[in-house]
Length: 447
Image 1 (cartoon, rainbow, N blue to C red):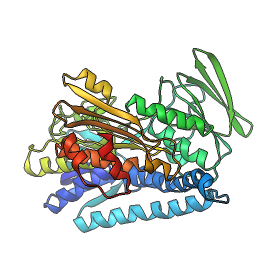
Image 2: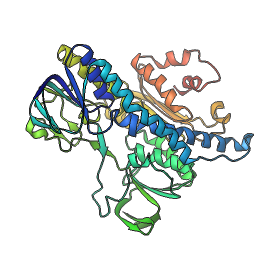
Image 3: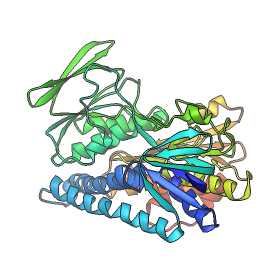
Image 4: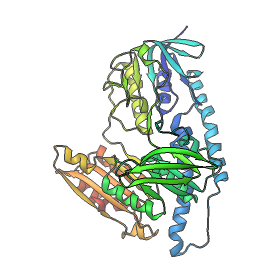
């Protein structure tokens, strides 16, 4: 048996942060992953997705500018785009391993399972540690329906050698909406089935309505309050059946993508042997991200049932907190004050802070400023018809929440996040001098 100060299970952004920081402080550290090193974001999520979305952005921009001076047709060569993405992804695991090697971290490759409260097995290796971190991330949910094993998942989609002519997505969250918009811009006919009344339920409802309209205007079929009940293989394609209050809907499609959500990846870890309490949202942790039932164990990122959103920057934030608590003892609590999140559809939807529904549920007095900005200069200059905002502030003028859909919303939302963190008031934001013409210059008019 080999003994360590720290074992980190998972090599994504949370695990990478913790292992590297602790090793540099002199802790004898080991890390393991059942997949290539790098985690979901770098290999199977945010980064490769945004490379593909970048191509779709060009198509979208050119299409909208056709009426105002751009001529000719452009299209996505899927094979060339995927080759570029694959080249980027292929380099990542070796780069990550070099970082671990430089930091003096011992690397293992394999799934970890607990033998006791302080011992894990990784294939033929039995390791003991004073502290163990679970940072295994999340995996796609398994569809519990006849034919539920037939759809591909988000990882498979990001590795498609060819893009089918017709694609059906099951789900209405980030993954479904982002990939649907990408596929539509690449030339596929897209159908989306979602069981909820609206997609992206956790986002500001009024802003999501703009996205729904933009989605349908692109020719995508969006079926809400529709439960997919069966998926059947038919010749070269699939038959998808969905039930709703309006009856049964049957779609013939070339490909089905399971984008119905993600759950913490804790399968096969024998957590019970280590007295680790967990639920549907992950490892149950205290305010220091320490297991509530096994003080040797910490969790971070999507594997932890924390108050943080399931986002890469939040995983990094929690990684820094966990590393500090392991090194110096429990003293650091993650600050979730501002957690901007973005849905990389086209147009892009971005949010930070409270929705209006959450403001209503709170005891705070608040005010709302919202509206369409489609007739503002920044929309007109690129012929963008979808551009809207909603900003919520308290009675003193501090920003409680900001919600934007439109061009470069992913960048504008960061300015609102900074305003929340810095406790700037509406008057401060209005009175700033912004560069012009820029998207940021619209912020003063949004508050």
